[in-house]
Length: 98
Length: 505
Image (cartoon, rainbow over all chains, first blue to last red; front, side, top):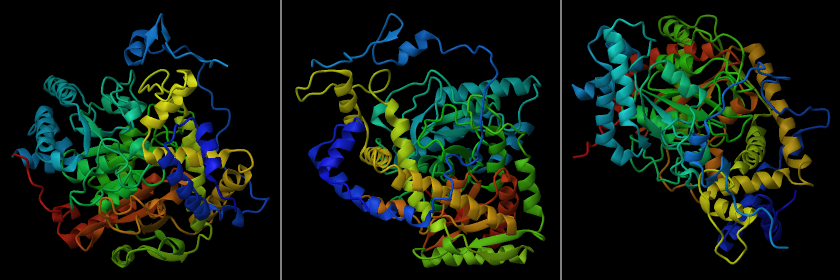
């Protein structure tokens, strides 16, 4: 089955939005291959006629009653926020320079 | 006197509170004193909420004195895994990324506990975001096994199991995604139950893998877990996977199980769950207990679940995939940790998110997020995640076929007894394989219990009972019956054989 290269790992870490150190990148590249090798048997026992299961007890169209429930008060949200202004979360600039 | 109040079971303590020989304030204070005495060595707690617990206890005592009708466990203190949101009390998931965060709301099960008038002693340690089998992945330090302080208590809920095993609390809450309630129960000589998926609301439980996570009771005996399960269970419109049916009488099942034989009960031994890699002493205790079940009238049947060896593979693809999605919310934007990049990159939302996650998450969490991201990425989805979801169907079919023949399935909970701290930290796969017997129940959503099953070389072993979905009561009936037989042989609970802990000056 597939193995993950160091370059692929750097790409996946970027997709996962995690800064990794050089040491972590080396370590995870090795370990992920060990894990993937151990779990790669999954597609050896399934045949196309086996349906996929996403949840243990299937439920569909779960809706709650259409009634208004009060939200958490804004001042309590603000108390736990990193930065807050005018009732909104204050975040770094969204777009880069380019 | 102070120590003896901590030795009561939850059921006994509830009776003492009712008849007035112990007040709720005394019940809370003796456990707070016990935490003061022994938690320096154990580190089961990340936060002790003494004032809140005593305030709840005072209200219970006042209402009892006024003749108010109180719920059965009113005044019985409880410890809560620090993965579960408690309004006004720090909730960290044992992660730097949530260090110091105080939730603005209670999890639904915390509301249930408060409605049951149970004082919350504090928040217990765990592997970061419940990812681990030893509690060594906590960002805030290891928890130590009271049977041998150099050994792991299991994980992820090591703190909750150790809190009850060392009489710091009569009851605790755990969560179980692949064995995080049952593994620690086995390693510490306590009882833990993973209920049927949907039995207990997850609203306010910090999500790890949403199709597998389930919260449940942790205690020192089967009846106490049943009593707590009744408090935790029930329909919650805030969790769309919550089962909308009345809660069965679990405590009654435990009470009857302890006094009745097991005639007519069919018990299945899954050959794939007693095989390679199991410590000989663990298997020996397991077969001794199997004989006990037979002596009580149960019929024991051997059967095969051929897809179970692949449950491990499917789990370590499905779980990280769901982890990578669930933990995307920790982005340094709204709450928790925010770290700005220091390497010259412009400070944008993207670079802040990457720096925050790089610094805020521990090694195991990063490993699983990256594994999950890879398994879900284009080109690999069908081979990994898609196949794993199909294996899940095969596991469910195996369970269905097994439960056509028997009422419950049994196995050792963990292949080994508690290992040394640090022993498996550098061997990721060896650590993961410790969950091989507990994972199938999570993949199928069926309930499972682990209970003390005797000692191997001075350390506790666990006995696992698995029942069909929504038949959690069978766990309590069979578990209580086996517990009665084992305690008759031992002359008391297994925990009586644990070494006395050194009390701090």
